[in-house]
Length: 405
Image: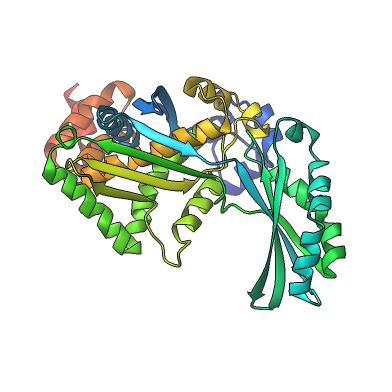
């Protein structure tokens, strides 16, 4: 703290701001990561109206962007009219990659490694008796020959059912343990032993139907499909389309203490799995003229593990959600991603994204201009009425309000 204060020229009030913490105290934060000088807070909201697999959920969301929680809640209400969201997750299989270089005969090595599959799986499972007792553990082995920029190499995939954990530490430990056997069988040298965040064996598939009359009629339904079609045809649009999906997924991930970087990496890699970047969702019109949406995305999350146990708000979020397993959490997150996508597409296809978004954004501008909580509503009302939703306008309105007083 002293070094940062001197280096950045912080004043005492700024240092005191860093010392203020919420539920996550400095003592705990200091044990979670390195060089801790404070904690960082974001708004914690709850999205409503979610019906997923015929069960009601209140969904905690942590995000700084206005309109996301409101949009998700509104779109979830439309989806309820069509029966809610059906969401299903595959087995919780994570992949650990073991790289083997300098292999004398790569294709022969593939056979020799697979001949020792049982030995490798048994050794991997010996590293985690608890996981095995819970019904998880190393399930299978895959071996591929890759043509890399530095020549041929092998990559061994260890497929592990991690049950209710995110699983990165589990599969990395297993990969370290089995490396000597793989070296012996291949005659090569094992280098990398690391989880893959392209968790394509841990997919969530979510589907919903929205009656056309609920969402605004045939023209709106058609507009949503046209908006999706642009994303399907153009990666420049697909990137923003998928960002909207991840708005929902990552907001829930932050609230529940998940690895948001792994989720983003996996989702975007999956979007490019066919050689070009594509939308993660599909929107169509069914035979009744209703809007139907489908999302397929890898979601690797956990309800047990160090970061979740150490962060009291993450535990609280899981309690509010009421999820019992990692699989259920993934299914809810997939549903939130699909519903969030619907909210954005509907806004784009009708009044445009800015009208509602900027009205909510005006609150942030009012705060940035220095408005106190009791002044915010008055500032927002006049800023929106003016049509100039800018920081300068918010400052001007705030000055006028205060001068009148």
